[in-house]
Length: 326
Image 1 (cartoon, rainbow, N blue to C red):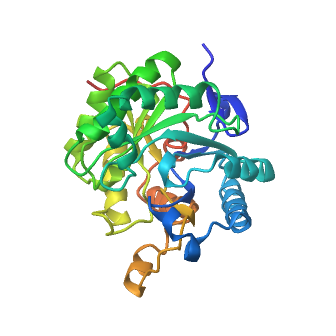
Image 2: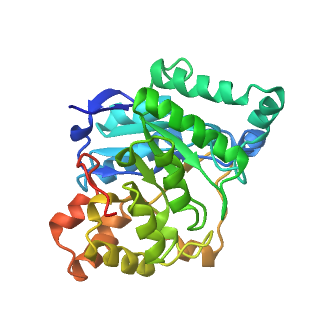
Image 3: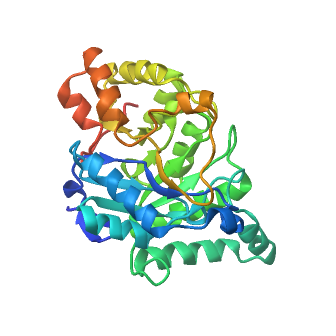
């Protein structure tokens, strides 16, 4: 049976996604940016310019599709993504979903939870965006974005996981997650799979924040995919160095998990609000945090680690079915 996925310019076959970066942000802002418009007003032309520049850069490296799983409250802008896609030919997939409790915009649905309508409201939001489009754009998300906190999935976060599982069973939409500081990957995977989500339609994100092989194998044995998707972020928010990511990834490849792993950067091309000012030490740590770092630096290093070309290619494609190693 043919599988389809929504992009910001319309539905395509999953097999036509081609070489894919599974987790990048053309725009992103921490909730609260809307209160800083005097100093951090949105410049659409600049966001479009740098977005087109980033899109063309990844295309030069053979990328055909980018998934942008920006949460609804973090500056998601499907209309801008459509303009970038139409200007460059890059296929872009956007999301519907909310960020984790510690850095998300929680008061809105917590208020509605107190009124007793939150679960219905979230379900209606997901279903309307998936079936009719986001706001009045007509653009439909291709994935649901979920997120959990460090060392726990809070009651607030579980509400979204539970509703996303229900929506997945009704629509077949794929799910991409955020794990915080290398924690809760196995728990996220088990919660979703046990709730009836098809494992091959789940990508547990930011797993490269953890270098423990047992942690990875416990997650992978559920049949889900995982994202080694923060290359370029080093020693921030608990992240390891890229060299440690490469070592862990190489060991997982040696165990035969390459068809369950996808690579990306979680890069941010345009910040909503004022761009963060980073000192020299932080700037040095994130100097390679951009959407071509994998191709310029990481892939060559993996080749030096004797990872074959066909295995490297496997980690950029979503189309292939896979089986868990239970």
